[in-house]
Image (cartoon, rainbow, N blue to C red; front, top):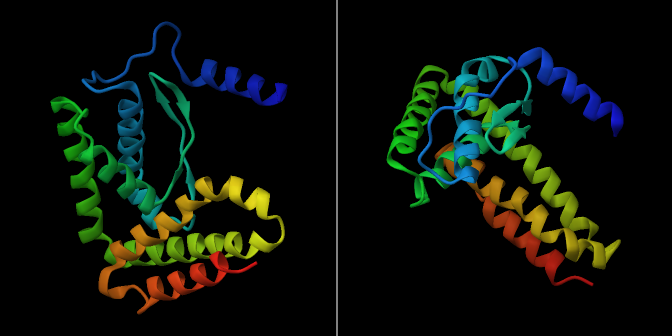
Length: 189
């Protein structure tokens, strides 16, 4: 653990100028500001991400709430956009910043439609595989399974989001098949 904290201290010294850190002005609560900054970083890296081979791209974002290290995916970007857009606490100037993120996402979809589709399919398969594996673990350790369920549910929600983003190109009946699998696992031993 000490090596990791030493590494972060070293990285901060190398990458960050001395003195107070400067952040874009924000008129939203800190947790929304941090999420917006994550979305902005993802939007800035969108072309490289789409043209690259990685499905989960590690990003590091320096926010007023501290460093964040989310994994970038298209579903993760859209999830942030939708969450921020729906939150009434997001301030007017931050809504303009969010609009720029939305425009970058829309432009990427028009400019790189094949790459967007391929990444979404890969993301859907990854989250679907993780969710199915989690469901299958119920009989192994039911108590642990119940504890982890609220956290693992995010995989299920991301599958649904990515299927929605794929629209007509999503595999036919995928959500129905998933519901049937869930029903079998939930009603099992």
